[in-house]
Length: 336
Length: 269
Image 1 (spheres, chains in turn yellow, cyan):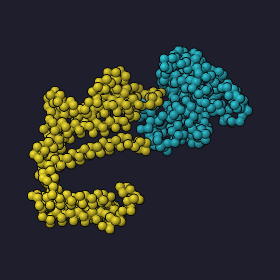
Image 2: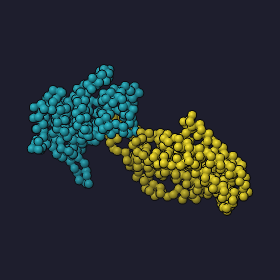
Image 3: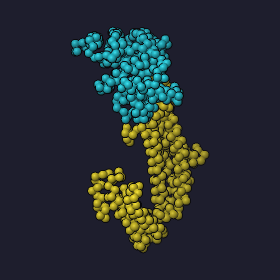
Image 4: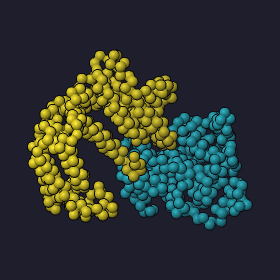
């Protein structure tokens, strides 16, 4: 506990997540966090359950192991600087341990919260130990559907956006259609799509592609249209062909905008994915949520929600990585 | 700097250099339609430029000099009249007539090297002639910054990079649109010296727009003074002075007074 008190003033001076600085303090917090998790393990294992729950022992062992890992890391950090980096998460570990302890006490240990709406941490663990296969299948199904839709939508949106930004004649025909249909939420097409397409999978792919394509198109278009004419003048005086102007000038110049569109498209594709899976597709995390609700299996719902959150944030992170790679030249130029 | 420039150009790339291109401008009229009204910018402009000449175009701001450069570059077509380079009518841009714009307009997503190599890339020559890019960067003193991105460069370095991008193409006609306009005065003096040396070394023809009377007289063989819009030629001054020139040479001072007089500024100076 003294370690936490010590870490206090340090936090005001240096950014905690910067790492590197104030190692001894964060390591102190890590030791505290380690003991807290071991304490949590003791609480789980030795305080008898009031609710009828399984997996109490597993939960306790996991909590204890995690605590031991933190203690080992804080010890090993003196020799392995890499381990010391874990130290910056230590305040989070502390808060999580406290939160879990409270959760465990009010559910499994004292049975204060009504079931099945507020399952215990044990029930949460049980979802993953007993239902991992179905959850895993749902995750894969969701990912596959999302990937198909997003890739198709992004490719179409990008192509249409470039064409719109480049050619006035194409713009004449596509622009009004875009204005009318674009702002319509893709989910509005749901009943029609399930009727028109032969399978619910192809219908959902279409809807996700549609949801992705609109923002990608608009932003690619505005990106291409916003390329300074001076850029074209330079390429033209140096002998650049039309093809060169599009591929080597317009598209790279518009790429930062394209990525904004891709982020927006990915966001709306998540929404469509879940709705499509809840309403028609017989697999995927959205379907799992619906199915779990039907059985009033709230622990399973929370479990699936966590998996879904991890999936979405991982995909967003991957897109960020790709952007940072392709737009490395922007470093120090634009931050968003 | 002189030594560096002399060494930087391998003799092989200097051998067989195209000499400057001759230019004939015949009765060129041009203008724009603005809010439904025709706005004449150039009126009956005619003059010849000998191969290898350094011609400065001087005139009030917005008089249409830059428009004339765009016509010579082939970026726009004149409403009437013709522009003939090396006996051929200008119908479009060509890498033998390269423009250095007032803004460096480097592509921010390309490194300095990749910006400079643009002209070779468009013509599919980059694979065989990579050393020309290196030579051009060395020529403008940017060989150490080949892998830098434009946002990492100072204003004058960026302008030099854009000069390298033009020189890579071994232009016969170098078209300069106030290339030094945005530089601080010290860098400007240095770049003026470098421009003169490059021109003497390589023998291309130069057509340069500038607002700076002194700059025009220091660099050019010939200074063409334009009137206010629509631009007409007011005077064609020969600057028959050896290089390097000195700002306080009596003939240069006399020409300066004359040029300023033609621009209606004699009394202010």
